[in-house]
Length: 192
Image 1 (cartoon, rainbow, N blue to C red):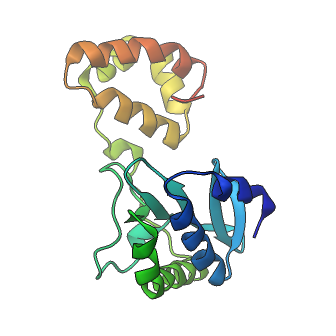
Image 2 (cartoon, rainbow, N blue to C red; image 1 turned 135 degrees about the horizontal axis):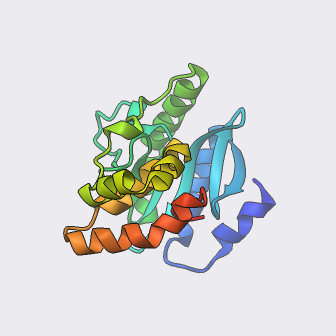
């Protein structure tokens, strides 16, 4: 146990008992506990394996390379259509976790084996993501914007592309693009 993560488990909320059960199971698998992104994160030889986190309707165990795990039991859930590698197992109470303890451990051990084998998730290239027509027009119209966008890291590029393509209305897409143009030109990501 890492004392830095204790505060996360000591919070009085509806997931307290479930979180303690998940913590016990994960630590029983021999992983190193750290606090990353404000949540308990568990690693093997400094490689992230799983993360415990909560939402309004459920708490979850997130597997960083969950897309590579066998999902014959159908428990691994892709959080959104844009999540490429990670998968969650969701829980609504501590009894579910206790009942599935052996299965949860088998997923964790498989995730460790994936890391030991050095397997990687084949991520889509940035060019494979849709580019909003409005953004494509701005890139052609403003060479400095095009250059700045191409100089961003692939992750920052993808974040902008997804953000710009999400709205149904052209007016909303245009407003998002206009608002973000200064950040792109300054080499910043969507949430920097």
